[in-house]
Image (cartoon, rainbow, N blue to C red; front, side, top):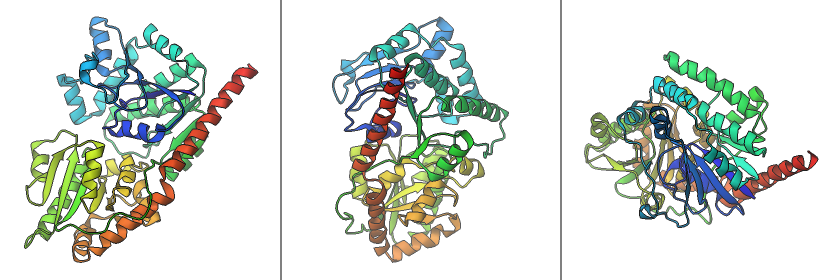
Length: 439
């Protein structure tokens, strides 16, 4: 089976999107190629053939009539920069830095207009797709019209079936935003999603809530698929550190940094007489001076650069509580309502107890509550008392570390998840061949 992946993120096992792809497709009996729309060099053990399109290429094509896109082929893992010639490793121009830092709705709309105006349907892209000759397309669904347009183009060009994966609320109008650009973009994207959903033969989602909403609104063929992990044997957590070590690894955008800052304030109160608990934050996001000041006081809360998955696993093993947080502000509550971060499964498999802090309607928090797999806080006024209780009763950490591990064994065993996904891909691929035979 030959699978063509269309994704916004590059496939690197050191970023979240690439890590999810590897989590799904490791051990697949298939050949892979990928079209991706971001800067950087892929780095994984699975896929060797790529076609890259970036925002920088789009801008250059409009300004200087340069061609959009390029083909990349790798043979070694990990890929060594000296072995490849890639001019577009990062996009460090000032306008891209502004976009990444502020993510204003105007920039999102401008980005869509630039992609729409560019000539990205090149002969080279078509040749890459047709030469690979896929049996199946896997295209995660994003709230970007240019990605949805790319999905439809590849589907039409190849005539093969397509499977998708949606992990955020990309469709509903249950949002809060005061920008007219946001709502214009949202309405246009909704129309594009509805059109593209007709091209998807199967759509995976991470949450039961999104499964029910999109199945009803779009009549989609959907299944729930959650990230898997290795949950064998008993919970490995046996002893607690002094001081207790909390770890947060992930993005601090969407105002998650404010929740982490609040945790730091509470820890500072609890540590007045003695250092009893600390929080370490690992993120690849750029931080302002204010964020650095609030997220690193050198005593109670510490800010670190992101680390790779192997090092993060070792950090988790030496820690006590793996943290997942979401903002309580209305805009971000609604934006992340249907999300189930892949980081949640990483936390379940970390050997730590899991603490989740989010709005009560957040799908990830609801899942962890239902499974009794985490220490769940849905009101920040309860944060001080809960952390105080953990300090006074550290055995709770061992108890919830075991509950997290057992939840992983019940629902996230990687071998069973991959087996089910592979069977789905075989079925959709064979259906595609049957359709061709009928024609």
